Length: 511
Image 1 (cartoon, helix red, strand yellow):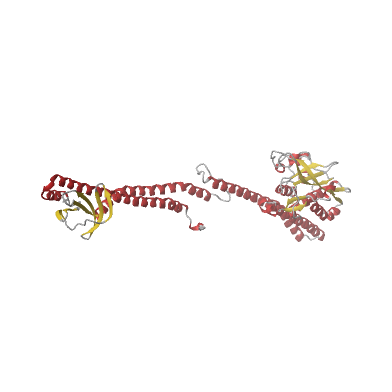
Image 2: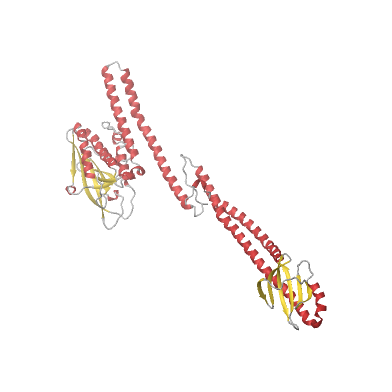
């Protein structure tokens, strides 16, 4: 049966779990001590009464015929101690020699102690314990009985029990104190842990110090530290994203405001028309920048990984390229699609998010169309190629090249972070190639950094961008476990190659 966590206290549970058995153990020890005391007292009392009866029987044997005269004073002296509360009877047949004639000669719960018979019987409103010894004599034997109230044994047993239980109760009290102190001391690390967590803020998420944390609690602190690390990374990424977005949006919004003011204050219709045209251009740039920032935010592993499905990358590339044909025609660029002949019969399947993969190809095509026209006025060309490739796998896990600042060459298979085994790794490869100016060696290092613009670095303002397109491509491809790198195209121009692992077998669902 489950218990509500709001009513569960670890301290109370530990004290209950330790204190209750300790108290029960003390109670059981007391009951056992009382039973042992009763048993011991009864045996000692029985033996004492039997010894007294045997002492009188020996005196009778020594007295012989003078026993009726010499035994009574001796018996009176022997059994007259008030503390013992003894009653006796000495009789020879029907003749009473000494003692109380009403003392019973038979009873219940009888047992044998040496040469005596011990039993219990009622006498004068009390329950008596009687030891009976028979001495051979002329005619009938002489019967010697020594009796003591049963309650006397209980009182002796109670005294015995008190003598035993007093140190036991002291030990029990000391045990409770020890349990209380130990439980509180062992729970102190949890209190310190809670205090350490209470000190954390959204601006300072430091890991918990595990130097004084018990081994049993360390799995919890490991998990908490891992959670704090992930939360810190997410918050830092969020803060960086907000700062970058605010910085990048400030320029187009300022331009929109400036052009709007010019349009409002212009007296010449031509100047107003020019200002409105600039206003529209700035608004388009702000919209595109906003869309790219949203795309960058969507490339979050925790949010998108659960939305992965099986995608035919060749079909997706063809459909995306077809959507950009009108844009390419508008800038006099020949946008072509090249598919490996081997993909005619078998789909090029990958596991991923179709929306984000479409964004990857759209950004690469847009980037190519943006830079081809300024350098090729008549024969601009952009080609999207799709094929299945087999790459040699690696045993070592190389660092992600997308986060490496060094440029990556096409022949460098370390651009794909995989493990080497005795086989090759099959990947889906998409290449977007253009015959534009290409990228200088000095700029290739920073191509995939956020807000890096090659046109701004080279002084070419013919193509305006926000510097987010390739960064979005990188983040999305990393999310899919793939790689993207730049290489110089044959005959000049840029070539961006995207590789995504293919699943080991054909899945059921294809997008």
